[in-house]
Image (cartoon, rainbow, N blue to C red; front, side):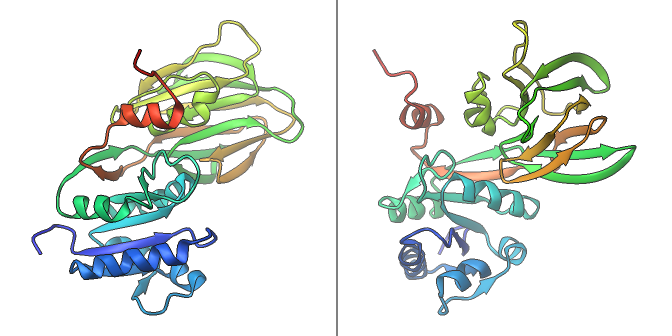
Length: 290
């Protein structure tokens, strides 16, 4: 088979109804096309699939030419973070709700996956963000985000005070519910709800979007993704930093959150007919033609 994608890894959201059948059917389809197929170990174990080789996520990424992620956008966020360092491109099949990152439907998955694996696809490199929390000069936590790093109020519900610097140059202070630091991919997620801009996912940019700021002058700002964004929590009764809404770390007054572009991007593969603007119209009901 003349394709750069001989070995295909499969990852499925194991607590999703119907996932067992979807994974098995897609695996059979791929083997019928002459591909070698491997399952993520957790997917195989939780779905009780025993007739297919399986690997842990790290080995799956390094041994596969492409990885198909079956689930919703949350599944894609977590898998993309895990596999980014290996460099394997990802294909998303939606069995969730919105399906912004996992843009192929289950009904269309055979034709769409066959098209991509035959070499007819649109490839997008998406940057990730690395967040580091420093306390009293020491690094106390570090993680990666595909969508966003959010510094916000915790359970007390009180506003927090932040000081923002970029490349060690003071930019502004603010009192607010928090701040979203978002990759271009994440500008259609939480940042959009906070009034942030839509940034095309291929741009090398990062947006800073205030959450309910206690001033009329606060506005989102877009900066180069090669910047180092430095957030200092100058005062908070209760605050927390979130990574893609899936991991968090409790903050204290005086903590610093440093956010930089991660060293490796994620590559998403879409069918040849894919259009980002069409996805905006379909998923977010944006900009209908008059």
